[in-house]
Image 1: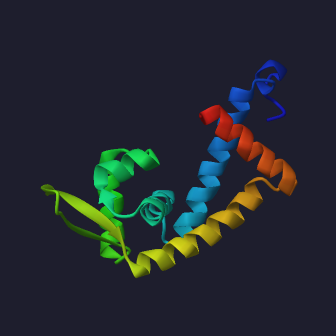
Image 2: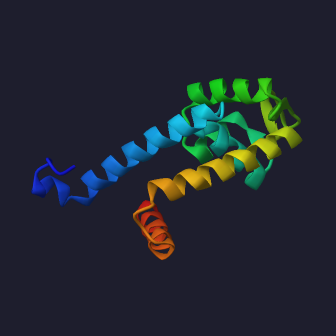
Length: 141
């Protein structure tokens, strides 16, 4: 970063992009080491918090493209982490449900991602991390 022009390094948007790229790389490498994917965590977390839902709605909640959702759900289904059943309200649609194995996997991934978050943000104190999270949440909202 030291070689980037000062005017560029002073732009929060540039800094956010650099930090996001680093976080994406580190999380991707870590998750691959655990035979997982960040999207797996997002999907399992959505099912845990909001309950069974359609593939489309889960993808919308998590910001995952539908073509990626299909791939991720196929992987999660094959591993027994989610179940697909016909939606009783619309037989053309599947309802995705978190399984007990999926709940255990969510806990494993959550622990792993929490550790990665600490590593990525190691230059900040716990209080600064909380402040950063609140500020980023405010920007997104």
